[in-house]
Length: 289
Image 1 (cartoon, rainbow, N blue to C red):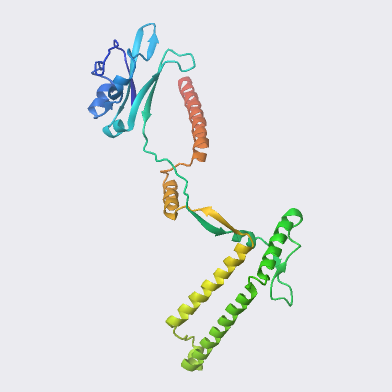
Image 2 (image 1 turned 90 degrees about the vertical axis):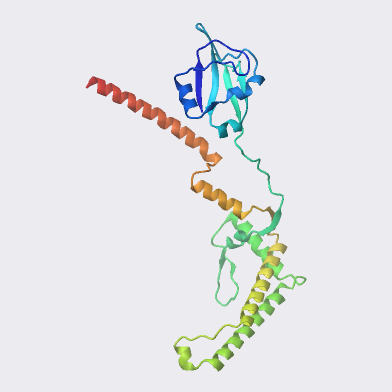
């Protein structure tokens, strides 16, 4: 959009502002652009003056835009008192950029803080099947937090009312029984020579169903332990498709993060000043030569 100052007399009405036949206005009209202010003349106080000077008043006839840009401009406002000393009035175009108001999702889902469990320092001691807490890694409050979480998980697993240990034993027994069945089938259907050559038995649909059901029981048991250990919280659901679309927009430079726009703008301003300074020095050197 391009601004243009008309050095003509002031006209009143919706379409009585004369235009220059030459200059930037002529170029804009030849390109099919239209002045934005004419669509909102009736809503502006008369007379319309944007510059007050010794040579008379001037009218700022707005900006020129294409038809698509015209439809996005909702109104024109002229501010006569901007708060600082100037002989110009401020012309503001109210533009509709088509931005949708962001609405926080009210949908929530239960999530487990598995990272806090992974951060617990543990060590495997000789003669023990289960890892124990490692007290040589952290000290002070940080170690105390990990130690309390470790103890809370142990108490949850050993709680007789939850029967977590019995469920773990049941899953282990089922897996061992399934392993023996696979070994027996392998011995019955594959010879020793075929086994040495790397041949495997074919997996049956019943095998896949057993593995799926046992895995579901195993992870359900982990979720039960985390839930009783106060590691489950309700979090807002963010659609994966929306996040992926935003990531692609950022990667393609179509979306600029708000936290990055301000420092980038400042950096561009500094770069512009530095470039202008270098250009002036080059001109001085050139004139001296």
